[in-house]
Amino acid sequence: MQQTSWLAFSIDRSAKIPVFEQICAAIRGRVVSGGLTEGTALPATRVFATELGVSRSTVVTAYEQLVAEGYLRSRQGSGYAVCTISETEPNPSPVPSIRPAEDTALPPIPFEIGQPDTRLFPHRQWAKSVARVCRTNPEAMLAGGTSFGNPALRQAIAAHVAEWRGIDAAPHQVIVTAGSADALEICMSVLAEAGDQIGLESPGYLPARHFAKMRGLKSVYMQIDDQGAELPLGTPKFVVLTPSHQYPLGGAMSPGRRLEFIQCAESTGAWIVEDDYDSEFRYAGRPIPALAGFDRMNRTIYVGSFSKIFSNALRLGYLIVPDILLDRFRAAIKRSGVKASYMPQQALAEFMTSGEFYRHLRRVRRVYGERRKHLVDQLSREFAMFGTFEDHQAGMHIAFHLNDGLSDKTIACRASDAGIAVQPLSALSGKPYSMNGLALGFCGYTEDEADSALEKLKTCITKSVG
Image (cartoon, rainbow, N blue to C red; front, side):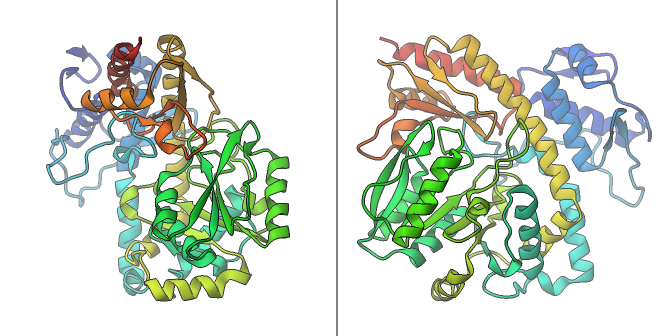
């Protein structure tokens, strides 16, 4: 254990509770007990990290979590300070139990891809949005408006994609779905029939391949080169692309290749489904404009999701559909039934329009950016003898390409036995294309948790050498 004089608490590195949660519990307890009064300035993150013997990212994560819970406030250029705790609000235990109950969701397993850190969820701000809706418009919690979803949320989504993705779409073109997987299934039901060809990236999103097989569609695989996905052979009814950040290799599709896909779709009467699954997480500059904006919504259907930014538990995503297809999508949803829950939609609209959604997005992007840099540094130092990778400064995972002689599936099995999750790239590849590597997520856990997992992964790879 290592003790800090500022809070007089000890970090137990043998405990299963993450270090950042131990820091949260200590500060939270001092605030509630009155040991830290309103306006008290907290130590600078670098200073406190040095005193604790942890990474600065761990302290930043703890501070930001307490900001989200309402215990601290962040002041530009002035660090963090203690907030007022309302006397009418029930006080938690000074040192609450942090270990999750058996029936609650556990944090993601290290290296699991596509998983946000649910411990950073802004519970208090979300609760305030829900409470406002319950007070002012409670019927909206159960009434979704139309089969396309809550009108206020559709308007908020249209404003969001205009600002963040460069898409000029009206609210009536937005369809709220039960996540991106539901959106892809709806697209397949509308755009193709059994026996039709569809174009899928290789490697690419595995559920899309499964959905196509279940519907009797013939998958035509598009290999990825340095410009993005190559145009498919044959005449698919539609293609599924991840042009802003290719899944799972990373990288953005070039403007020239985007134009080729659009021209091909226009000449053949085909459609482009743009799966923009994590485009908000670009750590250098603003997000790359969406293909749907480039296409001006002529031949492109846009798929977005809140699960990577906010929470998988909400199970909400959305489609943005060209006007010419709206009646077909409406009929398909009427046949299959609405799957997106009405309950959280008005609250999410309130959360977005209040600005809390964007404050949360900026916060987690900062934290994830530091976690990405840590993983990149560790891979460069400790794993260079096993393979290579390219840092695209975007997304939620790194694709690590293994050297010849190493099997990604063998390493993935050994990693699973060691309690860590790595996705083999070969499992995401469609014939005749094949890849050998590991997709390593970095968002769902702290740097301290990453270091422990990286040691296990290195052992798993070392055992596979030769």
